[in-house]
Every structure is written in structure tokens, then in C-alpha cells.
Image (cartoon, rainbow, N blue to C red):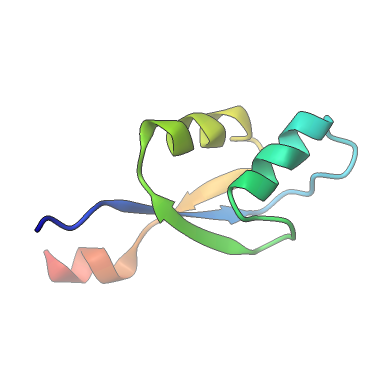
Length: 69
């Protein structure tokens, strides 16, 4: 059984005055307010969603995973 990779993202910019598709993408990533964090599986689909709203979110380094190495 292999552990699946995860990615943690944080919303650091507001979705106010953004196109509706960007707001919907934030909701799809389980983000809807500033400074919220969401940990998701690291899949090509999630990476594509992050790429579309890269100006609103940032990838947070996973401290727990770094300690395990």
C-alpha cells in the first residue's frame, strides 16, 4: 500500500471582482475565504485547477512530510 502524495494550498488573495469561473475553481479546491488552507491529492486535475488561479493561491510547504524524510 503506497501513500498518495498530497498538496496543501492557501488562498491569499480575494476572489472579489474575479470571473465566476475563478470563484467556482476556488470552491472546487475547497477554498472560499482568505487564509484558508486545503490539503488535496496531488493529481494532474488539481494541479491544473491551481494553475488557473495561481494568482489567488499559494502552495504551502508540508512541514510534516519534510520531517519524515
